[in-house]
Amino acid sequence: MRAPARRQPPQIEAAMGISLMSLLRQFNAACTAAGNVPDIQSSDRSPMPPMR
Image (tube, rainbow, N blue to C red; front, side, top):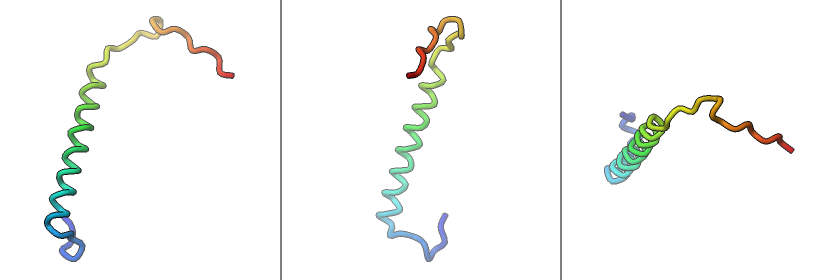
């Protein structure tokens, strides 16, 4: 993906790929969890207390 002159050693490239995949898995899990949160009707929420 990078220009040959900008490439890192293979071990670094592999570690970066593992880190990226881990972040993508976490992002996917967060999106899935957010999609499973039930919607709350505005009338079901208590009003927020005034800010001081």
